[in-house]
Amino acid sequence: MNAALCLEIKALIVEACDKDCDPASITDDELLFGPEAPLQLDSLDALQVSMAIKKKYGLRLPDSKETRRILSSVANLAEHLDAWLARRA
Image 1 (cartoon, rainbow, N blue to C red):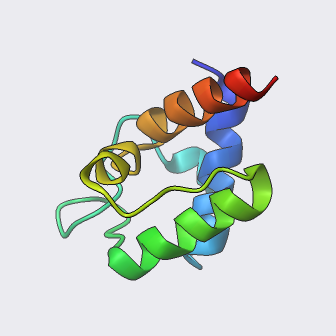
Image 2 (cartoon, one colour):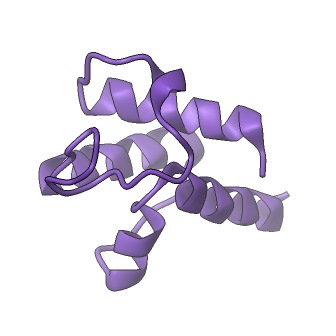
């Protein structure tokens, strides 16, 4: 997995969701959404992250079950984004 991309995504999430934490403190596999998740992101945060991804990388994430899986963790998002960027190259 691309460690630099994961760190970029963590910083993007912290900024987009206006969280007061160090991006490096977010683990790649931790859940991002829900009351049991350390960051406790919600549906509005999902929209913010999705818009930030679109703005920074050009990747549009449609509202779907697949998008919920992609946004569930930094690792899933990095894997999807990395594959998408590779297809565009």
